[in-house]
Image (cartoon, rainbow, N blue to C red; front, side, top):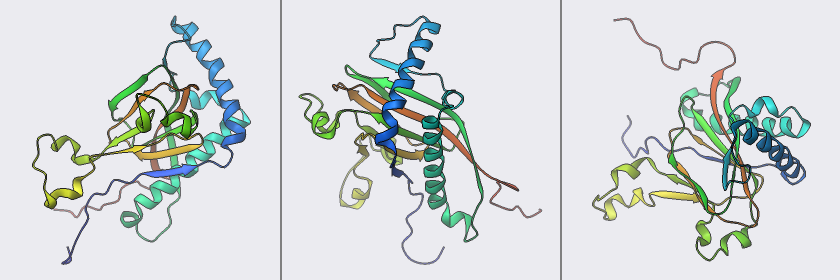
Length: 232
């Protein structure tokens, strides 16, 4: 390493806004409502529960113009974020990427439902696209949850080590230990699958409807391997 400061292992996160969201999202809400009824009937579950998560085979069920447009947006945003995150590792040569959506599903929440802290496995990237949620002014006016109402909270890599840790000016760079991303219809957040996160309680007038995914990214041709190994 050269002399000087090195900021090692940053956490890449991409925030994207879909230009077609206002036109397409209402149709997606209707599609998801029909799928929810069918899957709840098949599972023997009530269709009006405060929280619902669909099966993760949504990619096979989005065979409409609106659904395919959403998938194109997700894949394009993911390619952009992944390319920026790996620019130093990949070098100057452009990469032709193959994005595999390992799982795609939607979730609905209301009446204080939440999703506790978790990470995603068997993939390198994950994401959350907001289809429907209360407008910002209504959302933060909630008398109990306020500005944290329905946000996605990301916990930084040092979070697990901060419990009871000494805090002074020398390690102020570890603060804040988490970052809240407010939900906004048409917004996609792309993040590494290992990044711990949670959906805080939501109790809006509109149901909070999101699409989540897990993805792996590969070279379209050739090997994914980035590092050569010299023979012993």
